[in-house]
Length: 121
Image 1 (cartoon, one colour):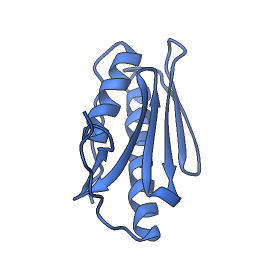
Image 2 (image 1 turned 180 degrees about the horizontal axis):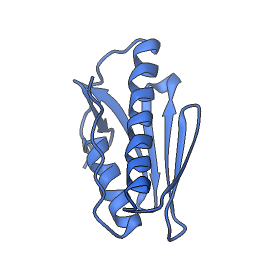
Image 3 (image 1 turned 135 degrees about the vertical axis):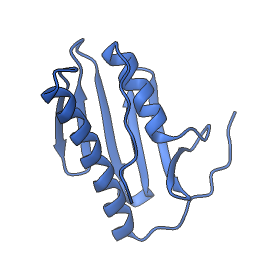
Image 4 (image 1 turned 30 degrees about the vertical axis):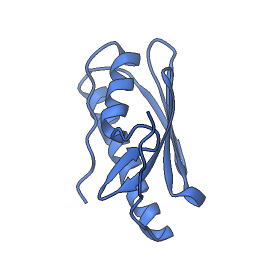
């Protein structure tokens, strides 16, 4: 089922600020889990791309797409594209929320419940 997503207009600067905060927030969660010995996820960030390697060898990749003002997630379960809609990042096909999808994919690939949350705006 495809839903129509009407993105909130963003300037390039707003897009970069929002996605930069998201990537930093994800990195902070991964760092906290490592420090608290919850799970050993290897995270590396290059610009607008964040790659997370899980103990089982699988990866999650989050990539910003500045020309499209989209956030992309690549996981074992598939590839997903998100647009900013009213303060949330929603999947362009089914309208699912980015952090819910990221948490579900990370939990599945990590073999344990892992939860990511949107950074404060």
